[in-house]
Image (cartoon, rainbow, N blue to C red; front, side, top):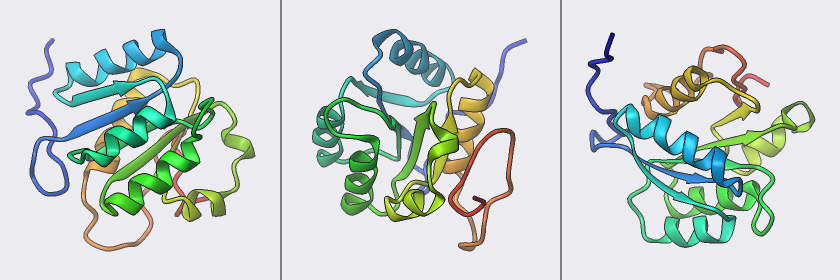
Length: 152
């Protein structure tokens, strides 16, 4: 059965573009294909430095980055994304989610932490969640294994 949902829209109603940053080429390609299959536009790069360069060109609604990048960390990418455009949603992926201090998430502008490993459904739910504008700054509802700064 095919999913007939319309392509996702960003907070301003434009089609949503995701910047995917991960140094593992095979994982990056799987994530890119999964997101593209649901209608997301995806720019994919292998390093934090490349990600920051891409962010500076604008047009990104969501940043999906690995925390442990070898050159510029996910923290640096998140802080840069928010400094350039505060409405950009930032999702960090990490295998070390249990070791991340919730205050660090807030301090760096991270909207959601996605613990690795995760299933395609969890990835897509995370993207839908950060793409949906909230009417007030209150905490979002917890879902699955997703961690948000508001809930930790």
